[in-house]
Amino acid sequence: MSRDEQLKTRWDAVVTILSNQFADGETLDLDAIIYLIGLQELGQLNRTFKKDEKLNLMHIAICRLLEPYGYYEFAFFDEDRWPHYTVKEELPPLKAGEQSVLMKEAIVNYFLEKELIK
Image 1 (cartoon, rainbow, N blue to C red):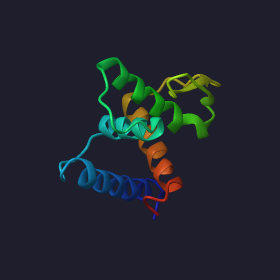
Image 2: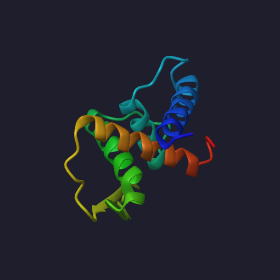
Image 3: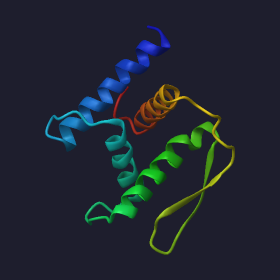
Image 4: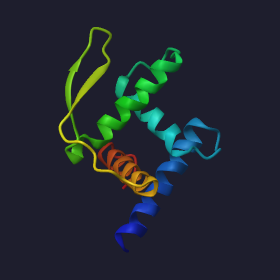
């Protein structure tokens, strides 16, 4: 199986699992999955979030997802237990499709690490 086919198969598995668990089978999009990862990383699941906090959750997820690629590094938790990251290397300019592939790959790797998929 080619790398692209393997990524697609694994991505579809992640989407199916998360959609069934969190969206009553409706297909979650990339942004929704990034948001869920932010929730997971923050660990404060039993509360509601304001609009700016939701954006911060997505930022946490993106930093965490791109950390293994060398773009971000975990720095510290603040007094409210929110994780903070520092930029290690700027992301190269990517076209929209390239960004999507990078994020899907990073998400698949995250869920391989968490052993949600194989």
